[in-house]
Length: 175
Ligand SMILES: [Zn+2]
Image (cartoon, rainbow, N blue to C red):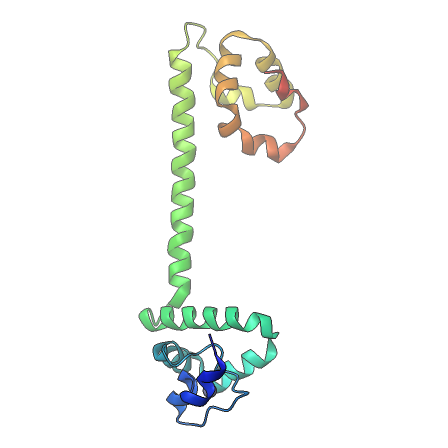
């Protein structure tokens, strides 16, 4: 962002805002170009220029751009939502993730049910029976017929978490 000509022609957004001379070693210049005055104004209002300068000096040069970008993001969020700032956005997204996970689980359960209904006769065992313990699971999958078809078809999506979790079922390949 900061070209060498930037130093001579116009001060960076920070120095312009603070009405001071922008020196060639200005810590703000590479990250607050004069074309983005609002970026520094936001960050200064929320964190204060001296805190920002201190933060930038504490991180390695290659991390400074990310630091400034996250400060700018946080500052903008805090200005929009003075109470929660970006935590507000994070908690909205977390709630959304939980809701979508539940929705996905319900949809997967529905899929299993619908597939089971479409299979001819032998619809007897409830789904949870197959999950009682490892032995039951292996036995039922190995029985062939309805359970094998039903369980086997949806296994990769619906049961992957269960299988990743206990890591004891090596017999799944038999389906
Ligand atoms: Zn400057």
